[in-house]
Structure formats: structure tokens, C-alpha cells
Image (cartoon, rainbow, N blue to C red; front, side, top):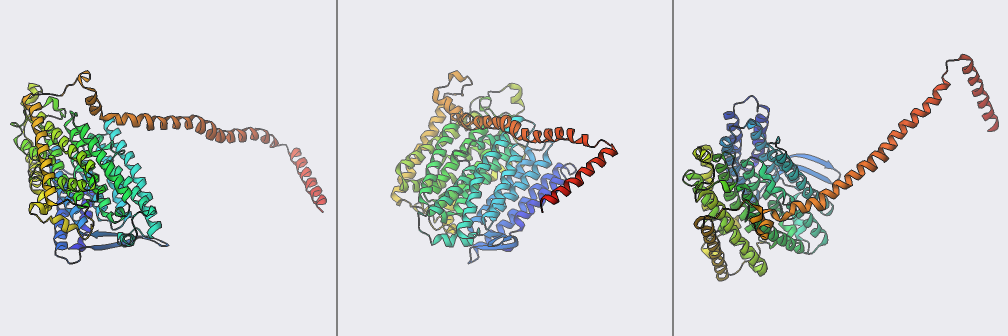
Length: 630
């Protein structure tokens, strides 16, 4: 079964080709069926591979397809690595991807670009599968670039809106910055190890001592790549703007696929990062800063999708914080649980937007829980899960990260726990503003509100169940579990970070849960009992609220410090260097040739006597030259 792994990415690629070519001729029902079924088939094969790997004594298989590049000592095959890490990623990508495809059938049914949308989704899944299956950094990089391209196409899907097209360009450009770091790291890896194959690099790196400057530089450059793809400071501003795409795109990019690529890459390269403790510390600091920044901005947003977008930025920060303290298992565990509850939350938000006829401002919502019972119940489960209350999935993964952070640095732990409290507050703020109180829109709009069709609600129910029970794969020993995920990933990740003793862990859990409950109670008091609605008037906001609402003016700072100076330099080069120097040289050559030809053309007079005279002059000149040169 493992040898059939090449079918997993190939089948979605076929779906892309069929739907892409037939987008204007095939019916929407057939396009939706093809687009979803190809992902489901890949999911079934992925389950078979996962089960086969579980029953196999050898937990790592390299499936060779063909030689791609062979130049001197550089050998790059196209081959896939099937091991515990990639097998779980296959299940997440195809499983969550299938549910999002099914959801899209209902959500995008009235869109004229239905066929094109499904072809893009299939292509996105193909490249994401290529990224996680590649047995070397080059194949991984192809998938890495491919998901960047597809994110550009999907974010800017409604490109006739100029702001959406701008958001797509922003995502593409900011990702290219990170990708440059990744590419330089790959060059440096080949220079250092003579290969780009994981199976050759990691054993050689395992023999090196921590603190090696070359390995530290490689790790730093790989982290730069991860910052771009996984939206860490300073390359995080593209992710909230990615909300310009249709809601299923937001769920696909923000939940289980593109933004987790950076975490996957670092987890895959854990041998290299363990040799660079300084870089690991930097990762922890940036991850923590990103988590805090995302949470503080989410506190005041009024667009339901923007709240979830900055929530994703914050949760990704948590994952990087875990990576930085060596808790690779905890971070990857949070990737899995985050895939469940964040896909659920985005799709629930899409269900609300669908019911509200594309209204996204929570100030115009309220009282929807009776009109959208399935959406409300599933979103409640997702909100509890991301807030970190037991026994829902988010509690176990977030607790594992924070317990390792506690052993690493107490101050970082305190900031991380405070961020968890903020998460609970802004998520329940979103839930209460959307579903509680009285409806704040128009009476005409209220009459049209209805629950979403089954093609949208069934994926919500499945994801809600996963969000509720998904933490079972990582129940810690302190709570009577065996942490199945840790044992499963052991062949790939040897270092698990330092964990506290059971007594300390119980205290940390209690602090976290009590703080989260207090945050929820505060949100309930403010937004349900007091019926508070965020003000629209800018003048009524406090200075801190303005800072948060305007995302700390990071985009404006980038605009002032980076974009405007670059624009000024480009204008200078255009007006001075390009027009006057380059164009001056080219045009000067043309002018001088034209002017010279005006004089030379007079020699061609058509007078035979003049031609004979010139011939005689030429002969005499040649004779004279011959005589003088003797």
C-alpha cells in the first residue's frame, strides 16, 4: 500500500486538469462531485498508507519515482518519504481538504467561477501533498512555491475587486521574501552536506556538535522561510488580508495546509534546529511575540473573519513558541487540533456570512442562535476547543506547549498563559456578539436568515466531533494517558523538550483553566448581560483600543519605511538612470548613426566619373601603403 503513495497527489492533479478544462462545459454538480471525490479517494489511500505504516516494523519508506536532476555531484530524484510525520499530514490535508471541498459545493454554488474555483482547490491540495511528501528539500520547495501560487489565485479569486487583488499580491510578495531565505538555505545545505536528501543530511548533522555556525545560519534561513509561509513577525500582515478570498479558502489556508507548512518544515528539520540553540531561542521569542500581537489585535476587530484571522496568527505563534523550546511534538499536536477547530470556526463563520447575505460585521448580527442552531452549536464547540477548556482538543495541545515553556522560561510561560486568557476572551466575544442578544440588522434582512444547506452543515458536524475528541491522541501521562502521538512520532522526533513533573503540571493546568473560565465570564458579563456592542465612532475608542483596532499600524509603518522609499528609489532610477542614461545611450546611438549616414549617403551620388575617381584614389592609396610598409 505504501508504494501507492504517488497516487495521493496525482489524483487531485487529475481533478485540477478535468475541472480546469471542463469549467465552462461541465455542470456544477459534476464539477463539485469530481473536485470532492478526487480528494476523498486520496484520503482513503492515505488511511491505507497510515494503517500499513502502523503495522510495519520499518517506520520510514522512501518511494522513488524518477531521477529529475543529475549534474556532477548534484543528484535530485523525485521521491516521496512516507514516515509517521508525513502520514499524519496526509490525513490532515486530504481529510480536512475533503470536508472543505464538500462545504464549497453549497457555499460557492451561485458563483459564476464555480469550476475554476474547484480546479484551484484541487491544485492547492496537490502542491500541499507534494510539500509534505518530498524526500528532499527541492521537492519540498516545489510544493512550497506551488501553494504560494495557489494561495495567490484563491485569495484574489474575486479579482474584479481591486482590494482583493491587492491582498493576493501582498500575500504573494511577502511569501517570496521568506521563500528567498528558504532557497538560500537549500544552497547552503548542499554546499555543507553535498546533498539535499533528508536521508543523507540528518545522519551527517547528527554527528555535529551544537553551536556550529554554518548549521546555525542554515537554521536561521529556514526559519525565515517559515516566517513567510506561517505568518510570523515581521512577515505576518499578509495572512489577515487573505480574508479577501472566499471563506472556504480562508479555512483551507488558515487551518490545515499552507500556514502549517512552516511548522512542518521545522519539525521535519528538527535535527538541524537542535544544533542551533541560539536560533531556537529566537524562534521562541518571535513565536511568543506573534502570539501576543495576534491576540491583542483580535480583541477589537468587528469583522468576524478578521477575528479568526488574527486568532490564526496568534495560534501559529504558539506553535513556533513550542518549536523554539524544543517541544516539537506539542507544536505538531497543536497543528492537528488547530486544523480541526480552526477549519470548523472558519466554516461556521462562512455559514453565518451565507445566512446574513455576505454581511461580516458582527455589529450588525446578534440573536442568531435560534435561527442557525447547527451553526451555533458547532461554533460553540470550536470556540471552547480553541479556548483550551478540557476535555476538548485545544486544551491538551496548548497545555503541552505551555508546560514545556514553563520548564524553559517562567516569564515566557506567564506571557503565554496571559495570551491564552486573551484568546478565550476574544473568541467568546465573537460568539456572544454573533449569536446572543437581539438582532441588530434590518428587519427585512432578518426575515431572510436561514440555516445553511446540508452540504455545509454536515462538514461542520464532523469537524465539531473532531474538535471535541481530537485531543485523545495526545492525553498526557499525568492524566492517565499514554500520549499516542508522541510514541507515533518518536522515529522522526527524538527530542521532546523538558516537561515538568506531574504535580507541577496539575498546577499549570489549573491556572490555565481557571484563567480561561474567568475570561469567558468577563466576556459574558460585558457582551451578554451588559449587551455591549463595539462602537463605530473612532472618537469614542480609547487610545489602546485604537491601536488594537488599527492593528498597531504595522501596515502603515511598513508602508512608510519600506514601500514609499522603494517607490521613490524606483521613480528616481526610472527618471534619471533609465530615461536619461539608458535611453540616452540607446537613443544617442540611433541619433549619431542617423546623422552620420546623412553625410555618408552623399558619397553615393550615382555619378560614374566620381566612382572612377574614387577607385583610382583607392588604388593609389593601396600602392602607397604597400610601398611605405616595405
